[in-house]
Image (spheres, helix red, strand yellow):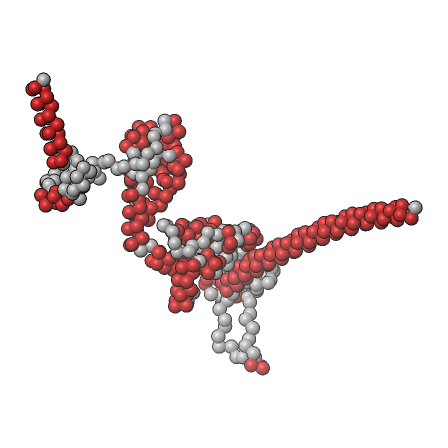
Length: 418
């Protein structure tokens, strides 16, 4: 009886323990969710505060620039409309200079009303000021050409600019993170050229300034290129991006590199594979531009077709209906894909059989006949299987020949006496 009660008590304890564990787990899950919600709301609030701060700062800079322009225009108007200072007047007491007197017919910079001048005062005025209308109304100041407002973030080298600082700040926020940019390690066929083009595209698209680009070079350059960059930075100091582009091309775009690109271009032929059209043609175009960047689109397309089989070249030129001088790289790739998709050519390891590259055998040299000593040395290595002697084989063995002669003689005698 006691054991049954103990069993009941243990079961109740286990049930209570399970319920308590479930409640604790649900409380932990709710706490984690609430914690995530709070963090998310605080993060959103922080982003809004930063965005509002950036907008207010940009608006302040814009108002400051407009105030500067207005102040300059007002100063020009005041200088143009004010009279020349009167010389020869005694200074007032206290060492102060006399204040400039404004004629009644000419209002001051802050007066809107003025009295008409008398004839005597008009005679005393200089001739260039007598043209002012004596109707009592303030003269209309000449129109000052207003210069367009140019923010400090304007970059003259870029094509176009954004006059609104708020839009410019928002555009700078959209710049990809430095870790998302392509890096350059100093290796690869033409990686340095692609790296320079990528940085130039980002600078044009996001209106980046030089300090934004140069400050990222220490992260974008890795391994060998980073060691070279640190050495150049210590030796030459800070320079703009244009200077660094020239140095990168001098370091990694040498004549030896151009010769390697030319060799790889000539040895690589297209194998009529539809899946590798974009890869092969893009790689060959970049190699060709590496050692001959001045070529036109037509010459590039012709050189690429020369690296293909004659069947593919003939099919592409037959299908292209426009003038060949109007060829572009995109048109060439499109036509090649169309030809291979509709009438696939056999895949094979292409061998260049063009007459310009074909090698013919030299018929001037005659085949050398082995000398007698070499023939004898070669025969010495042979061992006869019948007599086990070197210098001959079993067919030419004299032992076999003697046996055959004796056998032939016996058969002749037997046929004679029979």
